[in-house]
Length: 99
Image 1: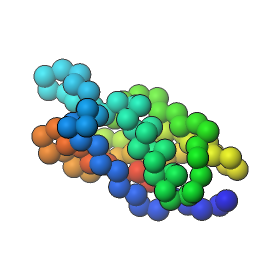
Image 2: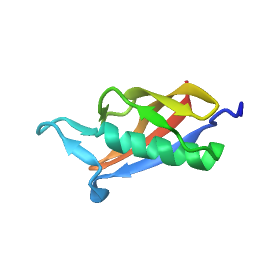
Image 3: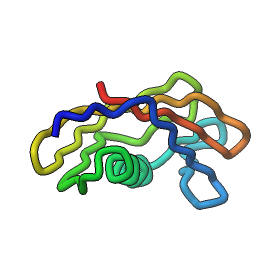
């Protein structure tokens, strides 16, 4: 499979318990929640179940913040970048694109 992930948007909202408060001024999306969203997107877009999704840290809930994660599917591995596009209170939206 040599498909490429096109522009994909995942939405993560605090109401679902997906935001982690780090301090009074700093919020982030946990790496586990980012991994779950990447897994869902890869399954939908590439019809493949990742054997591994590795994200080194949480994703800062700041517009423009990025996090690069490594994805392994049965016939290849690749990096994806999660980039925050919108923060509205406790709702964080981010794009997931193949690096």
